Length: 322
Ligand code: 5GP
Ligand code: MN
Image 1: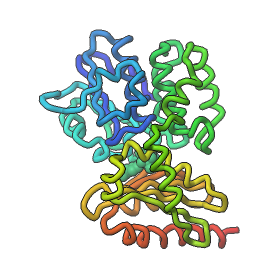
Image 2 (image 1 turned 60 degrees about the vertical axis):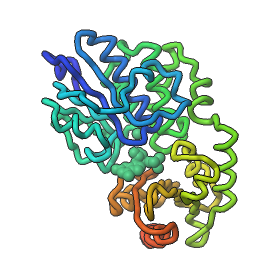
Image 3 (image 1 turned 180 degrees about the horizontal axis):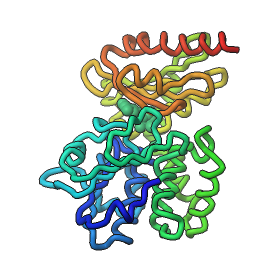
């Protein structure tokens, strides 16, 4: 466990940042930490850097303080990386990491090798937000911090349902509830709510999905031209891969979208047999055993053809073990 009070002794400036394309856990952990530092360490100048934030997180305190550009910032005394499995995933904020006097990393990705000077990496934790709660300490958590942390935990656990959820996760959730947060509203607002358009493209993704590997793998995706046609971007695809994963008989769900010329961003989810993190790491990405991602080159079918042998190999390995 990290003792932030001692790490921040004689420190005047702190930068907080998470991974590119921030998800609920990344936003929740960064804002939870930002609110803690600005509340309990008012003499320290704290800045938080993140990419574009989806509108459903707009209610969180501190969202309006998030800096989206690095321009002219730093160097900082301390840089805190949250929910990022490696330095490259920090995107532009990596520059602030390089110039900081001290670097701290708090994360829960199995693929994280501990890239900072001080590392607190717990692969068994449901979320980075859960670790931020532990670091802050129950007594210091305000209602606003609790809102951010609860949002992050709910996001990475699929509302306390995925196997990364532990009894500790539930206990923390209970403590956060007792801080007076509107937990059911938060879950509706940040996890379940969809715009009409987001529901339409979810419908299309399900309709166009293909079953492969004897129905054990389901794949769907969007090419650039489809994204342009519907006027949708990466932030609108949140949740589609989780819905695909629910399909009966499926072990692995793959969702991909064209993120550049002949380039696809791949999201993978598994139920119980396949370690998708291993596959993502092989293709230069990372993540968790049951949820991981990477970026791959080629046409949509090249990408699918390159992925499926890895999934098949793991499914066969599992059968042989049984
Ligand atoms: P998602 O599929 O929701 O984008 O990501 C699932 C998990 O894999 C998240 O924990 C996310 O941080 C991680 N992940 C997704 N894409 C990448 C990637 O390109 N590189 C790394 N290192 N991790 C990724
Ligand atoms: Mn996370």
